[in-house]
Image (cartoon, rainbow, N blue to C red):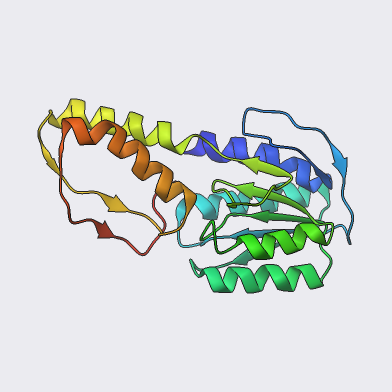
Amino acid sequence: MMKRITSIVLVLCMAFGLTGCNAITIDGKGEVMESTGNGSVELSVSTLNNPFFVSLAEGAKATAKEKGVNLVVADAGDDSAKQQNDIEDLISKNVSVLIVNPVDSDAVAPAVQNAISQGIKVISVDRVVNGVDVDCQIASDNVAGARMATEYLIEQIGEGAKVAELQGVPGASATIDRGAGFHEAADEALDVGQARALISIAQRA
């Protein structure tokens, strides 16, 4: 997990240089563009109740301080409506860069699109913003990761074992992708229960 956090924070350094990128992933490179606005950066994070996102926010703060950039962190508390309101408030403050880790990949789209229309550079982190062409996307392959984890589980417990699926935050792209990866490996090898428990906190990133 720490390697993944480090990779994300390194890419976020581009935001603290007040630049943007096109279709970038953790291992990719993008075209640098100038940003507008007042020079500040906003990090809208889905929740700070998850250790992964706490570490992400702390890394972003440390990097922003090192670069001499004003960074504001907004905790959505896993509330998609609050995240939308947070982003709209930031738009009114004319920030230069919005880094968003969506609570709900669909619900956040209108606010993110509004930010883009105002000339704010937008970077999505860990989860995508559905239907919006953001300037930069930093994410890992959650489908492949979940499939690999499930294959390891099968090796440990054996085929035919009964399992239950615990899902993360509904509407988050990571939840959907990890569920898809799990079923790619589990449906043929494990006895997956029909009842699925829904946990209210973000699943481990």
